[in-house]
Image (cartoon, rainbow, N blue to C red; front, side, top):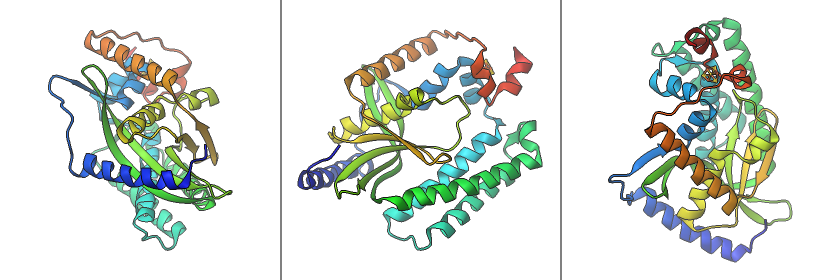
Length: 287
Ligand code: SF4
């Protein structure tokens, strides 16, 4: 979607001020007697309530896929923050160093009780090589178009329904200059490896991205932006535009999840999802 240059700059300037006020001055929203829930909890509970229990109640089981995803994302954020602060020189060297640091940090940390499949040496090596491959692709993607980072890895909170505050993270918000010199704002979500089946349809209706888009639109009062999922390993970007229909669906999903959680309603139905679930080894032992 193309936008008028002058109005974009004015909007951005206004929104940067709003952003500063919101997050630097920390103008809090009234949270008393309101329930807070993170969009990732909603997504995990909807995926499988038993998965939710295992992930949030027993934090000791860490899967190597999660460590890999976390290391890569931390690497991307460090890169984007350096890009924002204009301190990047050799982008590839920066990425390689950062990924090495993150990966070794997690591997060394004794607090993590890795599940048996994650302890195999070849798993570590496979993931390390895959990670290096991913950062080359990330570097190519980032160098393709001129971009101005606006927000990197920042928490948001918004009252989505009466008495329910939804929290989440803006992974990356950028102003992108397209080939025809037009500029566009994009709310970006990076995916590096999905532990779950992720079809094009699911990608276009990504609840985390819909929530970030809803929060961005309402907190900054901007309604002309793109919502983009970037699959690093495939080098593929999927662009969506969300509006009332998706936002209503988001609200209904959050509300119904809260009702289920409050009333301890857990419908567990082991099926094809289990194949891609990182807790399946633990789960199979239990049910
Ligand atoms: S293995 Fe299946 S039933 Fe068990 S937590 Fe994962 S998705 Fe849920």
